[in-house]
Length: 612
Image (cartoon, rainbow, N blue to C red):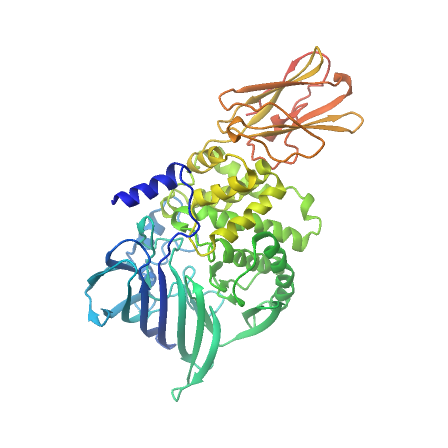
């Protein structure tokens, strides 16, 4: 490992002692591809010309390509993992192992050249290695010419043909794609199950297929041209994206809805699908997208396409492939979720193999907010993230939680991965909103998006933006929440009459420290609010005029108490974080009187039972 790579990794993993620069270099690609599909054999031939710009400070003597279709063969790493994992993935299990020869997927590389010179390649499963005829120097552009033959597998997950909804082609991860090279080196991860990471660039793609097929693809359609063979060529341009996907079916209907000036929504669905739900999708997205843009930033592309693909939902640039046989709310929910990926996966582009929670989790946070807005106008007052809280608590209680530093493909259980990526990632934002305050948090998220568009930010980059906007030190939060499985649990341990009023005593039971909001409710309905910063924050969030700032709680102290000038007889209750935004594992001990206790507040000190 080079000294440069060790230095960069140390900055990413161990802290923020050096400020990340938002002008971080990026590799660039320009793809020109033409494919000819045979719908009888489900095979296609392809020609690819790739201009590859080495914007790194390094000399490259080899390149790696992803050959995703090779995962859908008996004995592949995805197959073995699906059959031997501790909780085999529902819908996959042994289906790959049972594929027949005409049902498998593959890419066969017929020719590979660098600037016109033949280059020998080797293929290991889903990764192709090309040791170059001559090294690519820093700042140099080279041209790779690649000819290939491919077979579309029966759809098992994400991509493929002839799925259970009858969609002919769902074409994600369908072409030989160069791997990403970034500040930590090459990222040639085998395709086991989950995430993707690629360089940005421009795609010029021509898809030739039988003329009775309707095609929906990433990018903007440039035109169509019919041939004498009963086929039509569809040419698309997609600029500044890191992937390209498409779907095709003879029975697609297409709805076009203008969302706002400069943005149209295209919806592709089968005529026999639940048509009423899909026809309403455009109206819901017309309402959802402006709401999302206000929270997350402006969507930068001229079009977004929702294509019935028949397998869950999967995000691609300017397009999602998703199931169609769902209720209205489910169709809308999937479309909203996949559109939100346009921000954290497709414009910011974090390395999802390691930083899945910065995509899936951030997406889930705004997904729930948007869905509450669409289906419940009083969304602001709803109990936040309660479903994800239960998901998180269930994994923690089971003892199967793994830290957010675990590689996406290396979790011991799919349930633990799902909680980490979707649940704990979303709850990270809710905790930060609690720590920073809603207004500051909202500004910080917009600043993060504006600062790091098309630059592959990492967790430290995100942390620094949160710190700059809030003025708080937050490395402790990321150290605990991301790198460990330590949990939050605070309790009101005692409410006691003392000279000068009432003493409120609290205990930190969990190993993760947090700042606390404490609210006293009087019997006349009035409230007194107190904010106890965490010492490591070196400050506090902006307080309202009615909140009282207390002495910081040092993380080494398991106990904290303060005295308030009230009469015990007038006190109704004391509660830590009544908003339930702090992800405390045991809310029952956050309130005095305890929710599961018959203890009454009286003048004498009384110790509450610990409900852990």
